[in-house]
Length: 298
Image (cartoon, rainbow, N blue to C red):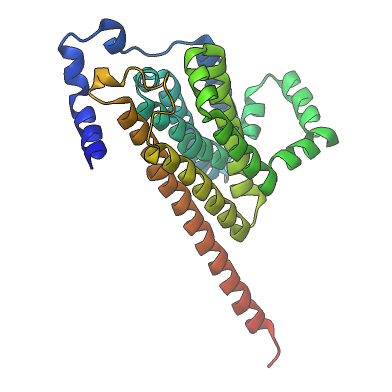
């Protein structure tokens, strides 16, 4: 309860802290203009925007589908951009709690929204004609397709995503990523790329029952990792929590709050998705039984 109270107090007073003349380098919140982040986001936005416009002009009856997918894509793109370049990213460098929020947005909100949109085709339409045709031929190669099928298979994608999460949350590696910009970029890329593979397997590769199982497993292991952070008796992430005192938290409280973010809110997303997939699986199974009963001779 004390930790939860500290989190609420933190959110209520963060803006006040900046106004009371705390250390300038800690409270000088800025948007993160990192070319290694801004450039790929800009290219993705331009390609999708151009491709959507070209496809919209050609489409007639399929325009509602294009619009729905575009809505999902831009929701994913905006949350991804917000997590990586907004002041949330700067806050994540100061507090473990906000760093964890940033990671969960990338993995549990941005990635699934972009995957639902299935943007690859739109990206191709956004390319110049000659480049689009050559890229399309490359994507149709058997080696490329077999590699993608292996990476996005349910078990493989779930394991790859789990390895990325647990490996980067090893205290030594996590603290190193906080101190090293290149490692930090690689960390975020690993989280997003494996999350895209995971959610692709959930939405487009697995049947609803298998998808529910993989979501349940992911909820269990991420919840266990969050619980380990929240219930640890000592500080595990020394570098990440070094500025906690400036925000009226102890390093251990900051770590506990970060663990609870992974444990409860993120776990709720996976649990909700698992329940939705299980409900679809049961509904489809019921319709299958009814269909069999209707066509069975009396």
